Length: 269
Image 1: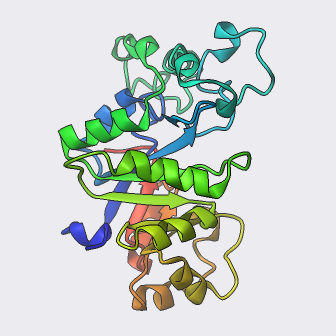
Image 2: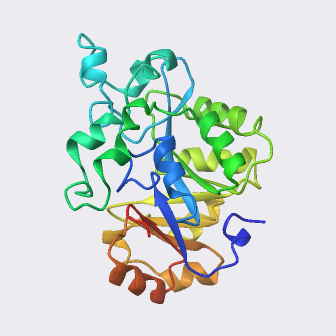
């Protein structure tokens, strides 16, 4: 059974990096806030210098942590891959949110200052911690493996399967990536693992046979290219289509009407 086959509803909302409009993205706080307000949670993972999976979107750490204060003499840009798990776990991944108010939710009063007093205690989660969280909450996950050019594809795939397959009692999991070589290898090694190809900027040529060769069940595209590919053809061949990142309710309704199954949003209700 595929990832999307497990849902009984036609239209799905994914919490993009958790509920990142009201909590710091890709933290357990953001994931906890999203439970009950979405159908599944999307998150990003990449490897530390010592080969451990850490949850973080950007290659560099400056935007969402206090790495510049914690490691003032560090290399620039301060990339995740340059730090060990122990070093990454020393970082504060929460207090930046209250200082920057990235979605204006503090200024607007959508959330109150006292609601984010706990945020400085947020750490960059490990993949294993998030899998444990998903097991406890029984919330499906879309795990995006970030492209890591300095690591061999086979190593990335091996490390992911090593962690994923030692976790027990998981809810449905979908694995996605912009690096389609990862997906190709994952499908060959674990044909039943649900996969989604990501695209931005443009679509691969010969799109349908390309996706079929990858062995993916879903195709997730950036909102700006959502109107420029044969959606009905893919749907007719059983490939589920989703769009990221869509926060406007009118645009969401339009995309659902066109036949998209899943929308990824920063703002939830």
